[in-house]
Image 1 (tube, rainbow, N blue to C red):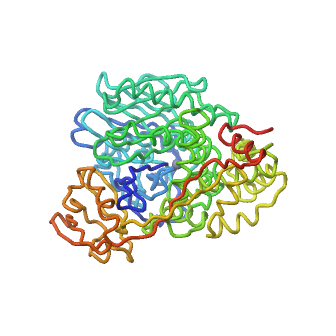
Image 2 (cartoon, helix red, strand yellow):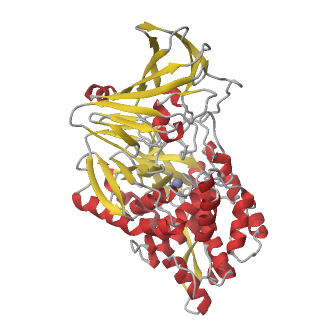
Image 3 (cartoon, rainbow, N blue to C red):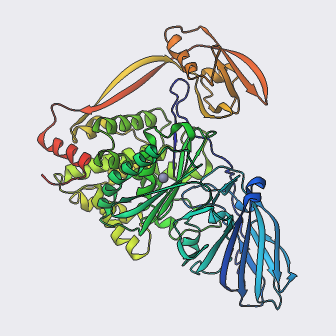
Length: 608
Ligand SMILES: [Zn+2]
């Protein structure tokens, strides 16, 4: 998963793209639940023109019952990669179960488990309608001529039974509409999956959208872009060209090309304020603001999702192997699965020549600034608590801080091995030892692989201070070993002390620093800021207030907002805050060894 936002430095410490849906919760499951065995499982999803108007899809599941006890069928509470409990069962209506033309008795056995009394019936059909009006890459979303389908939302599984059952999916739709998915096609309109894990790892696009293909690392990558015409031919060609340059550097890390084909599935929507994408084994689904397709973060997010095909979809922490669908599945290792994935996204762009070394350093600097502006937090703690959507500004920090930890480990391994080994060796060793043997990696295996790559150097202090602990990363010392240095500048500038998210509804306040100006002024989370200093926030010029008030401590600053739909006019008092910003740059006095390490990181090479 990666969420990128258009960062509006004028007001926010950090800004996140809006997320649709997403509820918190936990799943108190009845222990020992076990369904009657079922076999010959077939799913069918209907998405026709009328479904788009009604913003709902119709789902059918047929199977053969192999016992006399009730059939217990559940929907997942989350989608792997999304790390939030979404309780998909709440979108189900018109549930029914039928056999031989007669309806069967059913009730709820647990909040997201249906109990069906099949009696003597063997061939059972279950059907329901699924509401599809939340735009989120882990949800099912329907428009007039288009639907995004996610299997975790739609496909029931038998409780207490092995997920290793094969099934088929049929898509029933209008003539002439397209279907895109990474699932294996079995026949016209029908796809097949060897297990429930695979079944729910292949989202579908159904309807009217553009398709293009290109060879990437010798594999066909297909780009499906909705709505049709949302990307120009030049934009589509440019994205595929960027992937053709970046992805081979990712394949090189693992020395494995695990795909027969790969599906890039993109929704561009004018109401979406950033970009959010979700990874799968051979596909990803991205949602991006319609006006943001030329932003630099677009290839970066795709490089991140495609690296995930290795790091998290295949190589992943033991706490998440195998995936479970009935409850949250926390792990202290998301800083590796997400943060180090983001480090490799940055590397893929510079190694593939999509961006320059200067852009890589600027991105790294942005991550250092983000961490410096966030309350100190251990990487393990940040990883574990992501399920809660923390409101103190730390909710996504394991991306940037984990990415920086990846850079730090890469530098230390290269330094200890005289650039003979790198973080690439760690990932590849675990991929071979764990993923290829059908298991997740443990903490002991992770640090063992790091230490081996670093010629037996110890990493206990690193783990204690920077992974378990909250100590600040000592950048001056670390960067020097890779021929870089950190220059810092101090500036004083006005700050409101809020975090915001911008979408078509306006600039929404998501977090108010209790010690900041906004709190003192009476601004609350949930307010929608409509004007600052008289300038509407729909006009990009509104961000100029900070420059205008840069030396005017104590001046009144009028802010208009909507609260509960009603306009409220407040007057803030400008306060200046000291900001430390830095710049990572090449050190002209770097040693020969440090220069080799620097070039090795940027080019994906080891050795002299
Ligand atoms: Zn991710």
